[in-house]
Image (cartoon, rainbow, N blue to C red; front, side, top):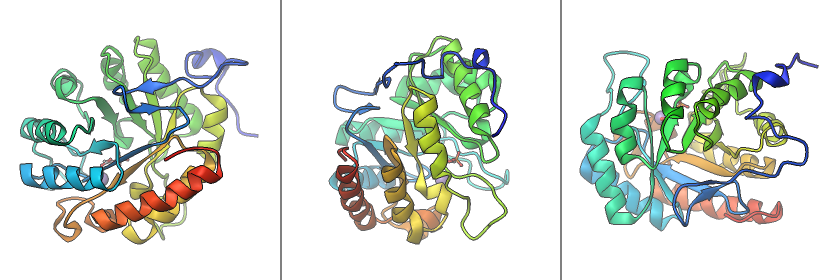
Length: 279
Ligand code: PEP
Ligand code: MN
């Protein structure tokens, strides 16, 4: 058995004996951790007002209840599209106004936490930031729910400890998001660790969702991974969706069309009801 962190290192993140599931509400209608799963859709990056608006409408039509889209993008190369930043936030806010969908968007830099918090309904901490401790502390000081992605080389216990930074700073609303890890096999972009979903659902009282898009890296496999995630007990899904995937400025290959997104929703709803949940 793998060595575990002493319980005293993650007292707030771990489930105490007999402790129920913590609910993380976003709006009166959208809540993580209950019987109902949360389906989040939207592009990798906010690219323009019309792109995010068109996608938001498609996500809503396809059964999504929350909108994603990065205004700040963590890119491997500094020469790749870095996001529209403040302007992207304004476009997201307009898309929310038009659709009523709450927004989750990534914050990359502790210095941007205040400005992103002004607009976002939920702050995303990306994989590459999971051990950016000053950033974790800073989002922990806000009252915004936090979506904490797993790092591509983060163990479950390290991930729990990252959540502990946010919880210890006073923010109780943390949702874990498994998005695939690096393994020996590069057939897919990452390897979705479905087992970690099952383990985390035992270890923590906090909600756990899955991002099948970054795990697959290929639109053809996203729905299969999403179905597996729901079967394993995930509390929601984060799915990259684009009205014109071929034109996407980032993660084009893994983005679903609105039709594929709606199809994923239908399939995952069936799996959800098979495991006593609702999507
Ligand atoms: C994203 O959600 O667009 C993203 C950058 O994801 P990750 O941090 O999981 O790579
Ligand atoms: Mn992406």
